[in-house]
Image (cartoon, rainbow, N blue to C red):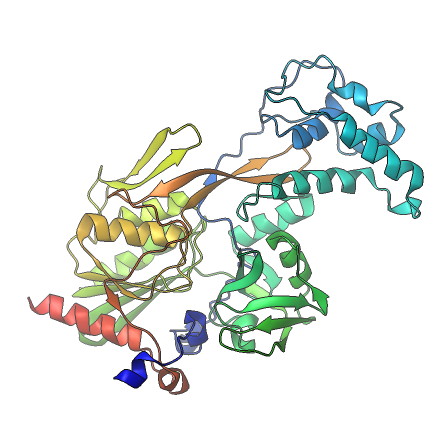
Length: 460
């Protein structure tokens, strides 16, 4: 026993080889968050009708909002006006005179324009002085100054990629990325994807992408470098937990087709339901599989949220509603002004009386943690596995006029009993970790323990 206690702790996604894979059932579960990691849970608010400033030079005020940390607005000019206007403007500082939306804290924008003009006048490679790219760079810098890895800016191309990802198909490697302590890390490689097959593991630190350092890269910038066309290669230099030497992992990109819900029958008519993400279509997929579970007369359910990086908040609420009576609290948010917003079960708790346990691990983040926390707090459902990731903030997507998007952290979320798990995670009721022998023998001891616990519940 003492040897087991002293055994080197194993990172969850080190066990990806033995976690249930859809390929074992004849289909690939090709989710690639990508490559996109840190956006869950998202609240969708995609209104394009915003209030305009009462200022004649509307085309340039998009720049103003990015730099002034101002309120939401958008411009009504066609794409490219900012480029032409700023390029030809003799005195850009005049943009910030007599606006109807004064900044509460005085900011000297002369400093910014001084730096802008110094670049215009002195930078050696004139062809690189692209105002549009500098505009986006300024917005990125402004958001980066917050020190929040979950708030970010996506230019129109990145926004398009993100939308395709949430719709369910794109090309990449199939790994969820985030940052921890300023270092780019793998949250979870998704079963059956190139990242999984190449041996990436949860907790791997990405030091280089194609021999270029990842220091100071945002997650979105890293995603852009890692993604690429099917059949092309990307080389990641990673440092694994417990290792002292980095290693290179070569990955061939592939088409990633996302299936978010997988149903299997286990022994003694126990249902196994794995949710890999919370996307736009997850609730429909889940409802479809729940109908099968009920039709099969299942005696119990194992809900597997391992390596699930999250997704849309409303999807988590919809799934929770399958277990929790209508009107009961699923999750609450607390915003910047201390205002609370509650999300309650919508009704239709068809799984409410079915004995259930939930599997979690280090790759279970955000919307996964919302669902797991709601089921434990409301129903006393046991969590089995390892402590979850600990992402307790909510992001809202704001579409900008030129097709770019801001992802803004707007709130912290709390479980029904008032716990905030941000940077803490959910502790399992029954802790089960993998040993080196389990990994070598491809033995899923967490699933085995879940089956054992559920059988005991059914017997009572």
